Image (cartoon, rainbow, N blue to C red):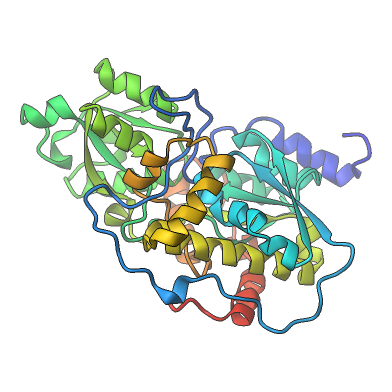
Length: 387
């Protein structure tokens, strides 16, 4: 920590105890490769049974409107990189030159999932795609000097990489009859104290059960494949592309996806540190480029425009751990918004769940964690995608 101010050193000590280790980043977990590919994150694409939707002209990447020339030399923005598909907006913006056009020199900084927020706090990174969970809220309550400035993943229609899955033999035998039948079952989650917990509890309540009525098991997403195969677990609130891999192997039956369980739940957000918050013009430029990248992702992976799909998938194969194109073709995509404004109300609602279940130590004012003025200005300048 040499070179950091006393206040920043104190903040890093608060984070260094591992409080964020269990943080669930939308669509990812550190993992060993699955046998059919090398994924540790969900692969974006429409569900296998979904017909390709016509491309929406509204989601095409908007050309920048007339603005002042970008600064010379470019502003460097260091972005934490955990190789997940929900970071598509940043990867696409870098590869297609959107960052460069905005005078942003994007540098991806490889880190572990749990190290993203500490990297931004320490100043070794300027932006991250961070999970919105109890651990982030606990850290913010201690004075975390960051803001959520844009969407980085949510439960959207036909674009929710998380969802319910049940072991196939339990479905075939009739043992599974919906959420009411899973009392006492071993149910796997990637982490505890995160948005999937809230969604799982909502799903169980539709069958008259609660979160506490199942035997929760914390397993990395790839490890859940073997756990299903060996009948160690009965069900999971799982994540793509692992759900698709397991369905194809005959291990599980897919249940409702995240949107069907908890519509528009905010899973993750773009997190800015001091540099991009203080230099608002640079922050807006960053988010203009990011938004253009997200819109290409939406057009190619959610709207299923063939030409854009062919542009975007090679970028994701290069930057993420999902190296199998067929998984992008078959798996349910990550939910990213063409106008990437996060759903703050769901963040407020989920805080109540974290507090009630003992994952969060003290209430925060969620509005203080969020600054939407930058993304709103970026969208105003680009023009709304209208969706």
